[in-house]
Image 1: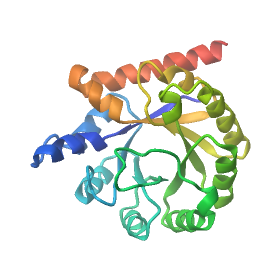
Image 2: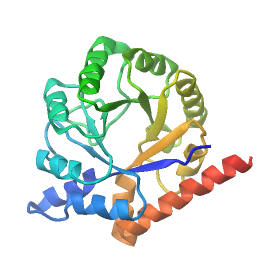
Image 3: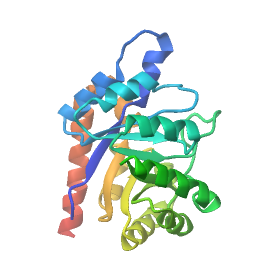
Amino acid sequence: MKRLRLGVNVDHVATLRNARGGVYPDPVKAAELALAAGADGVVAHLREDRRHIRDDDMRRLRALSAPLNMEMAPTEEMIAIARALRPHACCLVPERRMELTTEGGLDVAGQETLIQTAVAQLADAGIRVSLFIDPDPKQVHAAHRTGAPAVELHTGAYASGGADELARLQEAAALAAALGLECHAGHGLNFENVGPIAAIAEIEELNIGHFLIAQAVYDGLAAAVRTMLARMEEARRGANAG
């Protein structure tokens, strides 16, 4: 079983900065701390309303010597920004102006032509694309048809305690792998619930943000990242032993 990668989302460091204005805390400094603690990459969502991450943050994050995964809506504005910035990867997500956080997966099946065009435009700029989707076979098949090389399974319903959600995630991950898609997962994961997700063999990357930034208030960001990596590795070892 492959080692499970961890991407750390630094959006909410920017949320804290923006609450008072000014320049601190700096999401780029947080990214550097997370990487030094063992994270494999950095994730940041550039929203239409710039409520947390800003354009200059993205430019400075891109300058780091580590993979940057730019979360973004599949809009003309964001595609143009991504093509100019050329991050390592882009994760296409749904975006609603009034939501507090991303509330569900991208409806790829319902807007397949739009997503396929966005995937092609980003791939043409050398950007690896993933699609943030619910663990629904219809969405996995649609993602495959768009030509995207990867999907990220939305774990929000699982994190909220849905009784059947782990099985849905396991099945979706297996289907994605069978179709040749690299499989990632994220949303709502924490120290207590990450184990069963980390144990899914087909999942190659977890992207976690809000919990790690919140936990950093108590433990510091480096310690929070190291603990999360340890929980992920423990789950993987247990799955291998089984």
